[in-house]
Amino acid sequence: MESSRARRSRCVRPPRRRALMYTALASVAIVGGTAAGTVYVKAQAHTGTAAASVSSSSSPTAVAATEEASVEPVAEPTVDYDELLADAMESVTVPDDASVSVAVLDLDSGDSATYGDSAFDTASIVKVDILAALLLQAQDEDRHLTASEKSYATTMIENSDNASASALWRIIGKAEGLDAANSRLGLTSTEGGDGMLWGLTQTTAADQLTLLQQVFGDDSELSEASRTYLQRLMGQIAVDQHWGVSAAADGSAWALKNGWLPRSTTNLWDINSIGRVTASDGKDYLVVALSNGNATKEKGVSLVESAAKAAVSVFAG
Image: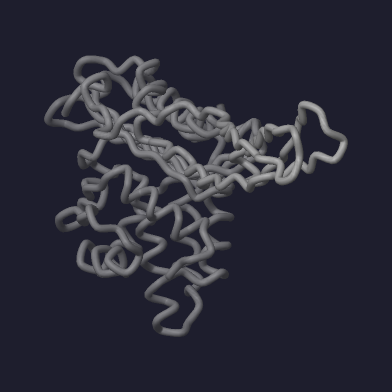
């Protein structure tokens, strides 16, 4: 994977906004008089209106005429948020063996930005996806979750319990069930892990941002009751897991799910975090931070927290 400095967006930086004013000069001939007047017409682009003033050289009978100014509307410059996020990520130190990808969406404006498009192991963030798939299946069957399903869901999300995740993984039909749900939820680059290896599901930051939109947005395949249920669980994460994208929140205004996985083949860590945060500007953001190749869990946590802060700074300043 490319380093954080190497991976840059393809678009050009947006031009700075400039206040524009157009001035038209029109000469007016006074019919039947002895003097000529001059009319100055000023038109401001942001209002599209014109104001005219007339100066006449002499005669009290001189009549000033004004000429309308035609002003073309000025298009708003296009902001390349991916480029702004790439700039913000320059401040994040990424160790040589590690890789990171982030994505952020401003829920107020709908604007978003993504940095990096590589696939990562999900580790335990897939538990949000597993529960979303279960809820979608229950909706299709016009039923509520069973008592055991609710118990599994609670411990899986709040405590990141792996046994509960495995139980629900079986119930949804493992990777086949997850992939079927994701095709409806709009995730196009996520593939369920083989067999019972749900933690090795592959995903991208952009796909996880899509999943969060399904959980926290109104335009969703999930019902309002399903979304509210998932949001509540993500807002009650166990105290020892209060890290990750929550670092970009103002106080405790967040809902999240973290994932951490030491890879036996490399002895390096996958550290991921997804969720919704309310930033210091009072607005809500959906944030995804994925990483791998971390020497320790602690270093991975520091990396995703720095990336989350950088992502939110693109919009919150």
